[in-house]
Image (cartoon, rainbow, N blue to C red; front, side, top):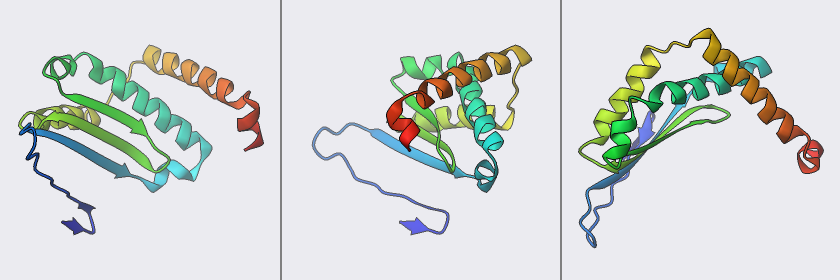
Length: 131
């Protein structure tokens, strides 16, 4: 099923009968591409969001639920995987942290320094410089 807001695919597991789901949300924003500063701030935002989720999402990890936050060039990608009856709870946790996002100044500084090193290491590779 596809609409202008997204697509939904469903395939029943007839072989193993495991109630697992794989969900991917693409939260797209044109603001990210408007400037290099926006791209960098968005990278830092996603890193801090993942940091903020580490402790509250620990129980989800124990329950064999997985999530990944990816800063793509067009927005935030949220990937969820696990037993389908528990995934809405994990998604709610992530959305709640998105809606109530906050960052301590020290955490922001830590991730900005880490990102500087990452960018530097990427840019010193000859094959990247050519691009």
